[in-house]
Image 1: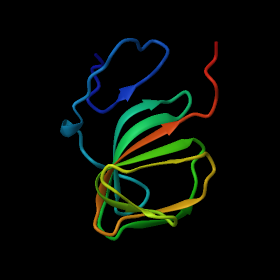
Image 2 (image 1 turned 90 degrees about the vertical axis):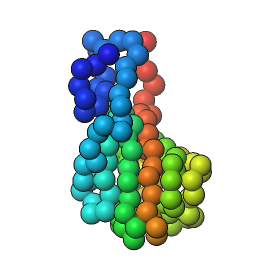
Image 3 (image 1 turned 45 degrees about the vertical axis):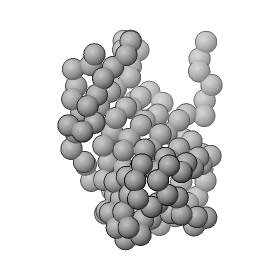
Image 4 (image 1 turned 180 degrees about the horizontal axis):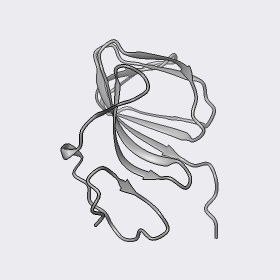
Length: 122
């Protein structure tokens, strides 16, 4: 088990299963007002990460993109982009470089996963 209470960080010397009590972690503000994060996992070598995101009611972002695949699973509330509104239990995946917005009318909590597009090295 990793001793860090902040997140699980993957590196070349990290092996086995790891436990993290996400309920004990504090929400951290993101660069966008109304969007807070709890990072659960990160791999600094390739940028992959898993996080919880809390979006305050009425919060929104302008158009932006990510360098990695972005997976979004709505745990609670409503989340929307320019294409649709996603409700609890719904899922969206975006290809790297896809321009999109993000907003929530009533607030939400999301599971976010960012995956690399690169194939693993042999």
